Amino acid sequence: MYSDKVMDHFEHPRNVGVIEDADGVGTVGNPVCGDVMKMYLKIDDNEVITDVKFKTFGCASAIATSSMATEMIKGKTVDEALELTNKAVAAALDGLPPVKMHCSVLAEEAVKAAIEDYRDKKLKEN
Amino acid sequence: MIKYFDNAATTALDKDILDKMMEYFTDRYFNPSSIYTPSISVHKDVEESRKRVADAINAKAEEIYFTSGGSESDNLAIKGFAYANRKKGKHIITSCIEHPAIINSCKSLEKEGFEITYLSVDENGFIKLDELENSIREDTILISVMTANNEIGTIEPIKEIGRIAHEHGIKFHTDAVQAIGSVKIDVEDMNIDMLSMSGHKFYGPKGVGALYIRKGTNVTRMNDGGHQERDKRSGTENVPGIIGIGYAIETAYKDFDKNVKKITELRDYYISEIEKRIPDIKLNGDRTKRLPGNANFSFKYIEGESIMLLLDQKGICVSTGSACSSKTLEPSYVLLSIGLPHEIAHGSIRVSIGKHNTKEEVDYLIDSMVEVVSKLRDMSPLCEEEK
Ligand SMILES: Cc1ncc(COP(=O)(O)O)c(C=O)c1O
Ligand SMILES: [Zn+2]
Image (cartoon, rainbow over all chains, first blue to last red; front, side, top):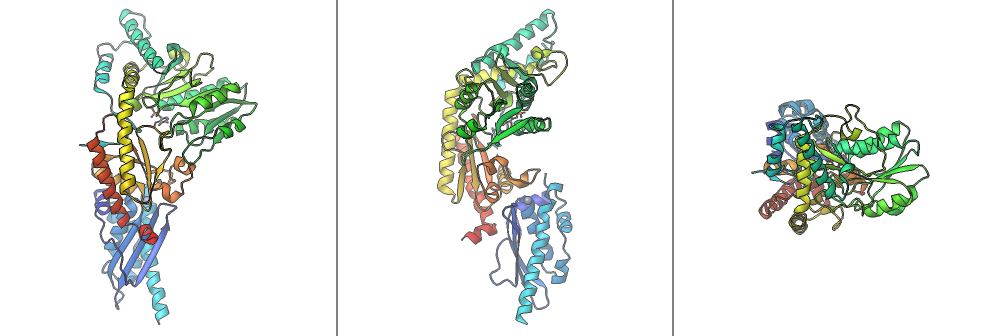
């Protein structure tokens, strides 16, 4: 059912954890629907994402897309990270079964939510 | 080596039953309806198999009709009975935790003007007898409640349901697909008028089942054709399958006490170890009135498909009621019916132990479960919030 890449990221997810002093944190999804994703970003003065961690409650594709998304945005600028789409994440995993595409939307949304949180904090600081 | 803990989905065909089936594929391929000598002898064997099935549930051979499995038996019982008795009434009572073969047969009948009451269940999955009594109407023709539930293993009070049905002159059908070989069934004592079973759930072959129809119960055939199975189910008989299901049910009840004892002990061991070693869980279904092999747990903060797939990586086969493993993206309706919130239903894993499982396998299952649950909880944002 799942590609080898999905299974690899599901079984050995990259960047699991929390960042205590994160510059941006985003939580999306709903336990009622079966998927919740929490993304932590560390962002430097040049708006480059220097570290990413995540925690996910969900199925294999939710966990694999979280893991892949963190790899794809690490080292990118905030603006670049905002361009990440769920389709790009799914493609990087060699595809997801059609019924599972909805699980990948959360990864895109989690990145956006974390960056929004970062920008909100920035605004308040200034 | 595969550690198979999904015996409610299907079981391994017994080798010696396969051996007995083989000659009907090859040397004795004859059509039991023909009237030359080799066919007559095959026909005789089919009838002996019918007798074996009948004896196992205290029915008469002429009350057993072979089908293609549990789903067909359920369809024939529900629709066939409804069509044959529509002049008497259009109301049928069933439960909300039936197998889709029953629920969807009822949905089809609703489109044709029948009215269906879907009884609710309590937190352990039992229907309520007072709700049943209160649902009975002048035009109720049939009550259908499963003997045991496939997901949570709850064994329903079949004998009492049958008694209530008969007190009101209503016929009673039970889907015993999960119960055969795990629960002793006597259609006389338990007031059963129709009963569905399926060979592959008790170490028999797939694609063969039976429907018991008590004499005097009118059922219209769903399959038109050459009048086989005394005109209830046309089509040349699946002779090897029929031979197989006959031996399988005979074996199931011959070894009943031994198997049930062993399976129950393994199941209770699994339940007690999981409860000892993993916090924040819930056992779904009743603690005692449950199928011997069934253990269904919800593991809070994590999701069932993930648990299932990590166990699969360790060579373990189980099943889940999570939404993400279903096509509808809704968690199991059975788990919702017993009142589980969605987020708890998502994290459910059904283990169904069978006669071939060993203590070593169950130990491996328990250790793997502890490891997998802890790995997924470390990854879960819900866990963190709770603490
Ligand atoms: C309670 C119940 N009824 C009916 C069926 C359908 O049986 P079959 O697969 O033989 O059609 C099953 C099998 O999953 C079942 O568990
Ligand atoms: Zn999912």
